[in-house]
Every structure is written in structure tokens, then in C-alpha cells.
Image (tube, rainbow over all chains, first blue to last red; front, side, top):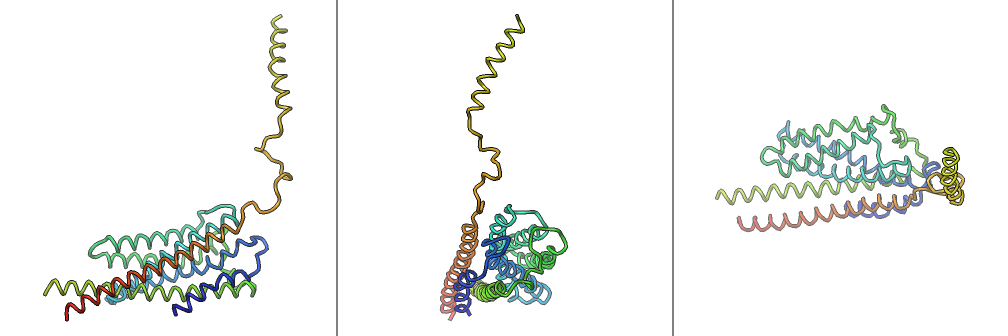
Length: 212
Length: 85
């Protein structure tokens, strides 16, 4: 799966280059092919972290905490991609780097929630896993609001109806990039979760050594 | 007499200033719209390259970081397991 994800990701620029330019935005709209999948993975990561945190908190599954932490880290990574590529597109398409509309502001809030989550997990000390799980649930609750915000509040940002109404020649590279980003997300999530589970095993062995 | 000297001083001040102002070329602060260079004001390519470059570097950097940390933890784990046997 790692090879497939890397291969698809490496071929993505050729697919995007083959897509036609957009009538009003011209060439710069091609940022969309990486911006939109990044934003989706940002939200998927937040939901994954929230669900795993709920399993950890309410079903007392210790391994779910590793998944929650891994997904939280990916939420920050894909959130950074979204929040950097978006303003680069906006500078040309809207004439400004940033507007404080509901979509952009709530996305920034979600990013900051997961940055705070990671800081809490790193420096929070004992009990930070449970407190962090609560934060991840709060982050997950933000996702539906981000998704529908463009349809309810007036903004420059494209609506959610853009994706299903895309012409085929633009839709193919977009869905190709969505697939590549999804595979990449799964690969990175599995690798990061494995790292977290192994780290927990190392800690347990050190404790065992100290006791004996 | 006073009026004549006042008129003369005004003329001596204003006429050279007006002559200098008339001799100057139009400044660049308020440029008429038909004098602007046609074409794109903000080039798209550097913005696209920055966006894609940032994502590429981010993905590769993160994958490398996980791989390195995983290698370190797994060697530590192997050492601990061999010690406990």
C-alpha cells in the first residue's frame, strides 16, 4: 500500500497538468487538486481521532489511545497543508490571503485544537491521555460545522456543490488526488499507530525491569 | 504700495513653482487605467509551486520522521526483550 500511495502521489502532478484551466481563475485553481483532498483528510483525521478517543474513554480500550494520538498528529499535518495551500490560492483568486469567514475561521480553530491536543499529550503529564481524549471529541464535533458552513454563511469560498458538478476533465484528476491522499493517510496512520503501540510496549518493559 | 509689494511677492513665489510643476512629468501615484501593463498582476505559477512544494516536503519529512522514530523504538524494544529473556 505504501508503494501504491507513493506512486500515485508522485504521478499526481502529471494528472493535474493535464486538467484544463478554469475560466475565471485561470491556472491558479490547480491548487484545488491538492487543497481539497488535504482539507478532506484534515477532517477525516479529526473524526478518526474523535472516534478512537471515544473508544478509549467510554469502552476503556487502551490501544485506541494510540490510534487517537496518531490521527491527531495527522490532523495537524493535513491541517497545515490546507491552511497553507488555501491562502496561496486565495491571494490570486480573491486578491487577499485570508478572510475571517466561517469556513476559514472554523478550520483554523480545528487546527489549533489539535495543536493544543498534541502539546497536551507531550507535556501534560499523567492523566493527559483522558484530557486529550476529551479535546479530540470536541475537535470532532467541529467537523460537521466546518463542512456545512460555506452553505449557510456568505463567503468567497466555493460551496460544497462544486465537487459533484465538476466537469469530467476536472473531476478525474480531483478524484485521483483524493484516492492518493486517502491511501497516504491510511499508510501514515498505520505507521504512526504502530510507532505509538511499540513505544507503549517499550515503556511497559522498562517498568517491568524497574520492578524486578 | 503695500498691495503692490504683496502682489509682487506672490508672483515671485507662485510663478517659479508653477513653472517647475508644469515642467515635471506626471508622477506614478495615480496612474490612469489605460497605462497599466496588460496581463496578470499576480503570477500564478510561484503560488502553485509553493503550495505543491510545501505539501511534498511535508509528506516526505513526516514519513521520514516516522520511519526514523519507528526504527529507534523497534531496536530499543528488541534490546529490552533480549535482556528480559
